[in-house]
Image (tube, rainbow, N blue to C red):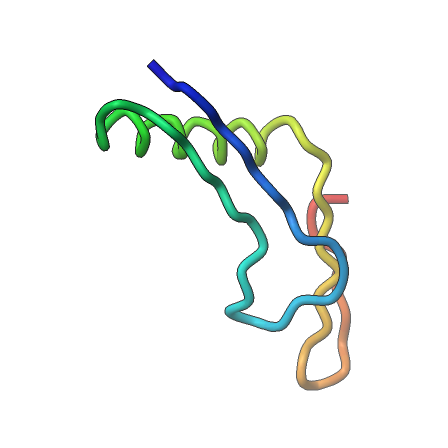
Length: 66
């Protein structure tokens, strides 16, 4: 069983390769912890409205997820 779970999602400008989400899970066994992390990230992507404003090197821009 999951004993504790926490997630933090960064807000603001991020560079390519920057960490956007940090997840921490406490479980008695490693496999359970990895499963909980996977489920949390999948739920986050599905449920939370997260939009990306991408700016490309040629100056063009694109909104993703709007």
